[in-house]
Every structure is written in C-alpha cells, then in structure tokens.
Image (cartoon, rainbow, N blue to C red; front, side):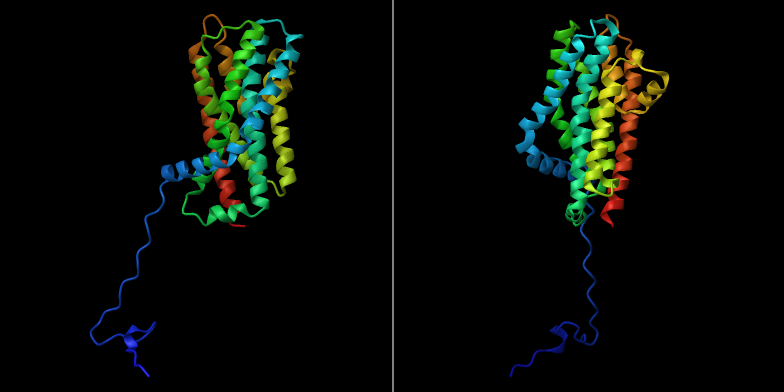
Length: 273
C-alpha cells in the first residue's frame, strides 16, 4: 500500500509555515463590441439559408402595394409618401415582424438559456440579432425605392439617403420587435404583435398623411418608422429641406436608442425567469 502525503489531497492539511494559495482570478469581462460582432456573425450565418425567400417576400409585398397605389395616386407629395413608405415597409417586415417572432420562439424554446451561459453582455445579444435581421433589408429596400421612383416618375438623385434611413429606422423597429417578442407571454402572442406592428407600419406609413383623420395622424407620429419615411420622402422634392431631413433622422435615431434599451431590459427580464 502506498502512502500519499496529506497535503496533496483535496482539502488536506497544509504543511507548517505554508500559506494557502490565492484563488484563481476571473477572466476579463467580455467587451460589448467584440461580443456584438460575434453574435452578429453567428446570427447572419444562421439566417443565411432563409435569405432569398425573406428578401423576395418583403420586396414583393412592397412592390405590389406600390403597383396598387399607382391606380389611385398620380404624383406629387402623395406619390412621394407611397414610395418612401413602401421602402421602409421592407425594413418593418423584417426588423419588426420577423424579429418579434424570433425572440418569441427563442424564449418559448429555452434558447435564452443558451445565451445566458455565454460571457456576452445582454446588449450584444439584442443588438447582434437586430443587426443581422436588419442587414437583410438593404437589397429589398433599395430595389423597392428604385422601382417606385421609376413607377411614379420621381428623381433618383438622393437615394443615397437610404444609407442613413435603413440603419436608423431598422434600429427603431428592431428594438420594438425584440421587445415585443421578449415580453410576450407566448410565441403566438409575439407573432400576433409583430403582425399588428407591421400592419400599422403599412397603413400609417404608406398611405398619404393628408388623407388621414387627425386622430390617425397622432397615432402615426407615435410609430418609430414614421420619421424614417418622412426623412426619405422629403428628399424627392426639387429643393429638399435638409435641416428637416436631419431632424427626422435624429428623432428616428433617438427612438432607436430607446427601443433597443427597452429590448435589452426585456432580455434581462426574460433570461432570469
């Protein structure tokens, strides 16, 4: 029988004069931006399979709406509102509707437990998923805007403003969609709320505001995508008021920060339950 010294056993006594070893320190806390990039790449690779159907459905829906409205609207400010609203509707379809469904299913299936075990900040999970879904809207939004301009005879000179409208409107709608999916008690409720949100973006964003009652206009002002629509529609004029365009974009960006903060809080709340 071999004899093992007591000081090498787990919990064994220490030798005389020997000090206890210091506990191992924790690793460095994960930083937000590297974690955000990792979650974004992971979400982008997972959703890549559904990219073509996603782009087709979102784009075909908006293009079909513009074709229907062409028989009602001839031109002018109403045509500008239809083209701008239909373009932003592509963003709403993905960032609001599909993201609400995704987080609702993720919560119901226990997928949040997987993210809770990862050393990533909650904001990185929300922002990474929102950014990945919003990235799919870029080609569809551009195609819709170009088609609408050609259909209604609007100028193409200022389509570059979509480089600001898409991420800002996408952030606002993605934060709202993520919050709806995380706060909904059931995935079916999250799907319903996402569909209602997209329907609101359709009715309040595509239809010209001049033809709406005053109460509906007030509801339209509460919708985050409204300010992206207004900013894009103002660029179709012969002499765009860039100060008002920047003001609308600033409001859209501010709403995006608030909605993403609410979505992050909803993620923390859902992850600990």
